[in-house]
Image (cartoon, rainbow, N blue to C red; front, top):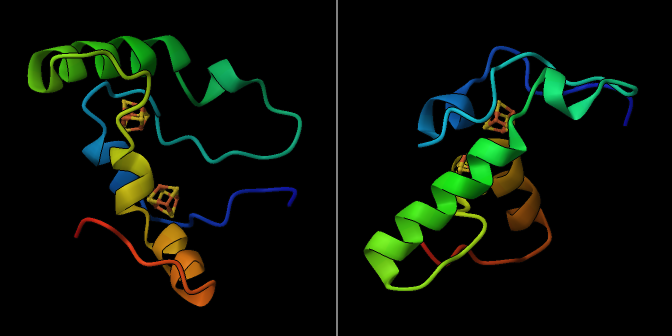
Length: 84
Ligand code: SF4
Ligand code: SF4
């Protein structure tokens, strides 16, 4: 894959509690910092899991869960979503 297939979608950008992704479309060769703040992602996931689960996780997974492209791919592969 050489570029993002997201088009006008910004579901994960809007759903992220850390505002980690800025919505800039990814393409091969881009630096991660140009479109994604991995430190904001990790720190927010740690904080929320500490508060809500009583232990730390380094990813909350909301972005993965809400992505329609990911859902379609999982469905095609026969993988059932556990939530939603
Ligand atoms: S894992 Fe959670 S905090 Fe990190 S980018 Fe995805 S939605 Fe945002
Ligand atoms: S939810 Fe999926 S398709 Fe939509 S912008 Fe995020 S990664 Fe792209």
